[in-house]
Image (cartoon, rainbow, N blue to C red; front, side, top):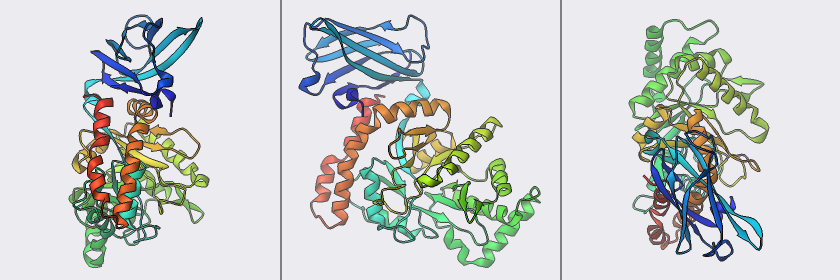
Length: 428
């Protein structure tokens, strides 16, 4: 975390582009105070130099009750550096370079929400119980999550029931990883109102549905397994029918000495897009991250060909305390609210980025350039503060499921704190 984020309160950090705004820089600790009467120079550097005028630009600033108030028009959609310098003991000292982001109206009206749409519990091949997984999600700063156990929908409902009546801010949604018979493609049902896996219990009905899709679509290109593709279409249609988001999972997973699914089927799925979103960043271990590199490269190639591809990033974690995968990969959704319909609408409307934050590396956002650029600012300047508040909430959620009778009351005292922080930082 940068010192300017750790030692100073800067509000707001996101402002509307092209309108006059006031930024308040308030030192939090004695060692970073700005003393009255100090000779001070404040300049603004638009990072992309968009808009008219000189760079750096002079900007109106005044010290008032220990806080620096900076007023100006932050032009165009870009990051700005507010550089504050003072003269102390005959030398020039940088008080700080404080970062602000100006947004056009459409994106300014949205809020960033962190989520993971693909992970597992001990109800399939994960390690911890559903309620434990949910608490860990809040502990690392997630705003929403869905448990997606293999072939099982019920564990996601179990996680939701564990916190019924408990005042938490984490949004829990239903989900499952869908594995249709005789089809190697993995799919996630995020938020659907019923289990697609349960429909495979009626084998005759399922196969009749796939045959109907085959008849409707006709023969696929050479090399594409027609049955497998039709099965995918049938599953994605059922997910959509239940109001969920169907996710095409890890298309470049290397397993059993080859990529799975087969390349021809992957290409056909990417061309026809029966899915709701592509898992462009998946939960790969460090020795497997080449698969994410291929998925990102393929995503950009398909976008260059004119395809609109909604994307997500997921951990696919099979344990929260293993020190791997969990928290490495996730989705940042720019939505109007953290409700299921709003999140799905935002993702399908191309208002999401996939984030990878590998150990020891700076986090990287993948997706449309405009959103990725803004996301990198948020990852550096805003989300560390949000996540620090969520950490205590997650610990109290764990205490609640462990039987601490007072945890719910302590959670109630914290409820809304992260949302209030985001409103101060992203004043809208």
